[in-house]
Length: 119
Image (spheres, one colour):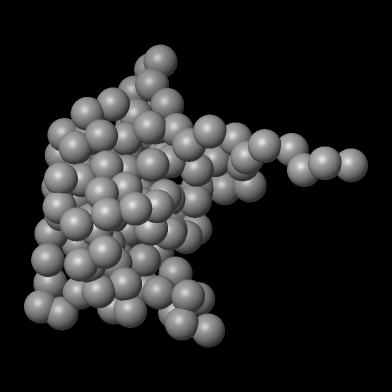
């Protein structure tokens, strides 16, 4: 229940930075719109996994301790362009908690596909 509440808040906040209608991601880049995030999880102190569809996960890296974010509060993923693309993370940050804290993202990578389970 809490996760769905956070998901709905995340969608509302993500809409604030949604690319304009008809906008396309930069050519040749692996990108997603901030409004398309379906969920997230902590990987370790400096990495957050973001789920963006049936088979797309990305790892966002920050120099700050991501575990210090209050994940029980609303979390927003923001980008200056509305697109989040693999690479250095310039212009992308995660904000959340009370009082609100902003964590700049220093790297974005596509998460490896999960290993197939044995038959």
